[in-house]
Image 1 (spheres, rainbow, N blue to C red):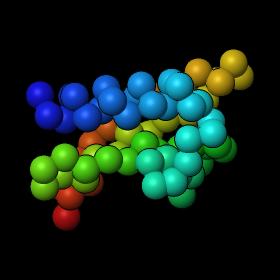
Image 2 (image 1 turned 135 degrees about the horizontal axis):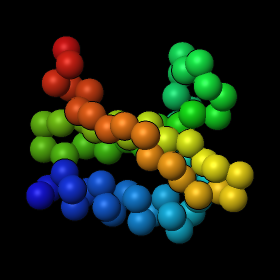
Image 3 (image 1 turned 180 degrees about the vertical axis):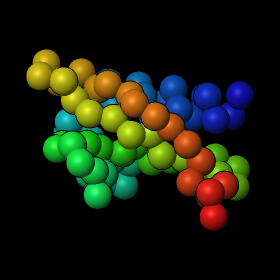
Image 4 (image 1 turned 135 degrees about the vertical axis):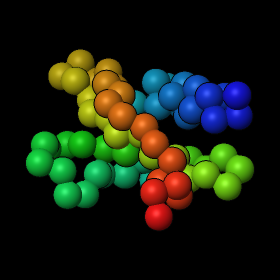
Length: 73
């Protein structure tokens, strides 16, 4: 439940701050074929999590995919 709790806390922050939420929690996703892709970043335990998302025209965040970056090394 730690990852889910941390993700929910970061999503709440993203919902409150919207596109104004910046580094270190949110940054532009580099290397994407699609414009304006972002990634939400957070750490839990020994995991480093990334959530790819984009804002729709009404500035609602659309979550696309999430994963633990540290487990892919």
